[in-house]
Length: 184
Image 1: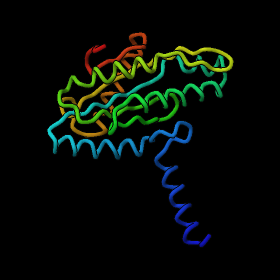
Image 2: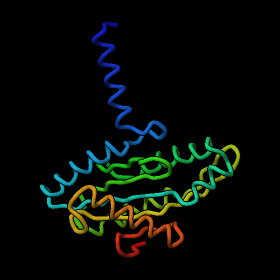
Image 3: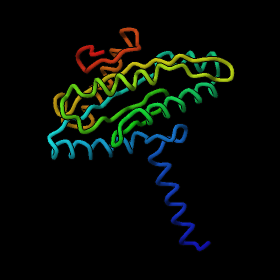
Image 4: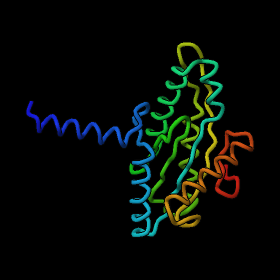
C-alpha cells in the first residue's frame, strides 16, 4: 500500500471518529449541529418546519448501577438501532453522550406533524430489551422545539428542547414535552 493511500485511509478514519459516536455508530454532537444548520437553510428554502427533539433515558443510572456498564452500553446500542430505524429517511438521530440523544425531524409541512413521528419513536423506545442477565423496560423524557416557530438559531432550538426535556423529567419522566406545554 502506498503512503498516499494509507494517508487517505487514516484521514477518513479520523474524520469518521470526529463525527460519529463510537459506542452507537450514530452521529455525534458535531455532525448533528452541522446537519441542523443545513436543515434550517433547507427549511427556509422549502418553507417547511423542523423539530429538534432532545431525549434523555429515564433512570439510566439505575441500569448501570444494578446491571453494570456493559449492560448499560448494550441498552444504549439497542436504543440507537431503534431510533435510527424508526426515524424517516433524511431525519437524524444523534448521541450527545451518556444517555442523551437528539433527533432532527425535517421537512414537516405543519408544525404539529412531529407528534405522529414521535409516537412511533416512543413506542419503539419503550419495547423491552432482553439482555443475558435481565429484561430492561426503557422509557425516555423528550423535549421538543420547532423551527421557525420557537427559535431561529441552532443553539436556541437545542436549548429550548433541552429545557423542555428537563421539565419532562421533573414531571416524572416517560413523557414528551413541547418547549412550553405537554403534548403527549
